[in-house]
Length: 111
Image (cartoon, rainbow, N blue to C red; front, side):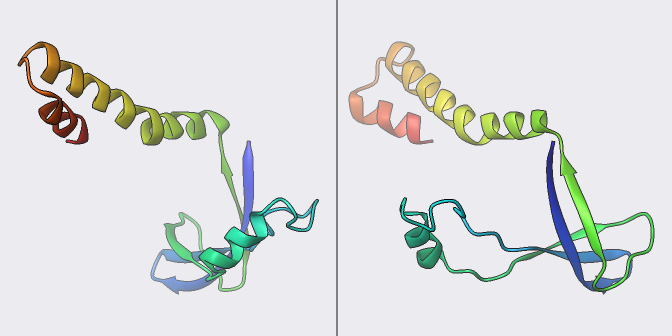
């Protein structure tokens, strides 16, 4: 179970805008592994996201968001593996079914 504490920063009717507490990328090695460079590169702008609550919340209230690990694995598969597999399938279809040249195979994989 992945849990994150969020703070309600604004209310818009029943929709609350939540902001996560910023965490250092690597607190154990003080950024010697290179994560500090990426942290500076991408900035530390705080991002909020809307969420509709069934019960009432107040600005400044802390809430805990829990996410089941199985959902993370499913979404990671959809984001990373599915496009890769589909590009290989389309390239194979272009090569075997349509007897396309290499350029058309690359274009089919990109699509």
